[in-house]
Amino acid sequence: MYEFSFWFEILEDLVLTALLLFTIVSFFLYFVEIQIILSYRKTTFRGPFYRLMFVGIIVDMISAINMFTGQVIPAKRWFEPFLLRHQSLLGAIFLTVTYGARCIQGATATILSFCRVCAVCFPIFYHKLGQPNYIYTMQFLQVSGAFVALALLGPDTYEYIMEDNGLYAVGSDDADAEWFYNFVAIMEVLFVVAIVANNMVTYTMFKVKFSKKKTISTISPSKYQESQEKQKRENGLDKMTFIVCLVEIIYFAFIVYSLQINQSMNKRVFYFLYNILCVIYSTFSAWMLLFVSKPINAQFHQRFSSLTSRRSTRSMSISVQGSRDANK
Image (cartoon, rainbow, N blue to C red; front, top):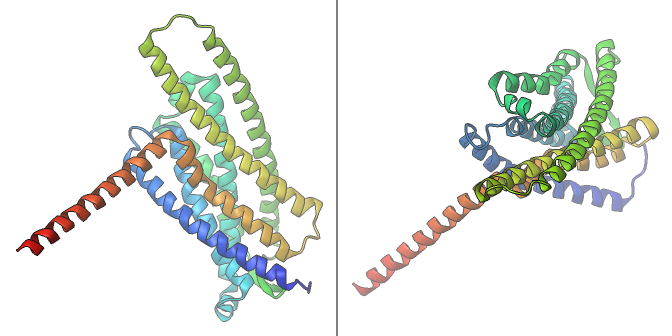
């Protein structure tokens, strides 16, 4: 067993506490954003981007909850008798959700980058992507990896092993499970290659189209304003897609380093870094939508402005009622 210093244990506890608090705040943003997207799903957020992001948000929240309950709690050996008594079931849930969520997150980033390529290069086809048959097809591809994970990892046998004074879930060397792990590794590579290629094509074609629009000399003010608003929306979607893809690439680089290049990395150190990255991956969408998506940002301002005005109105009515009672 590797001996960790007192300061590392203090740092680990502080980081986990900060991650938990940050996740709680991000979940609050997610709940508001989910309500906004559902409220305007037939108007403002009817496009494929927000439909795919909606599924991605749900999966990100599940992934963060799974990390804290399936990895942090056993590593801290909280509720140890309960964990050991149900170790096969709990291990199956943790690893199946972990790999299933990763498949969905990678597919989400890839499909979003594909949608942006279509928006820039094939705008007519991009408008068709908002139709139900295309939406449902993309969402099926988005979540299909989770069903594969459930079918292949769920039946496996799991147990907790003691390492560095913590419990960690591991599976057997079942052939189906081993095949799935290799499948996920190959898919990760394909996802990243597709993401990089799609973003390069999107960026190049967007610059070409933007330079062409600058050469247009005479257009009416109303059409110019409409074109500017559309361009701002497209810019926002491009920025959000780029951020999603960038985080996916960073995650991929960490997995390659820790599982392929530095295979002797201590399990506790691995999960210390993995937990940080997992929380960042699972919560950044909440802040990205808030600061980059203009429709989401506008709805946030509108909701909290109305909430503040209602509170001030209530305070004024209470003070007026108090003064009336005092004059009686």
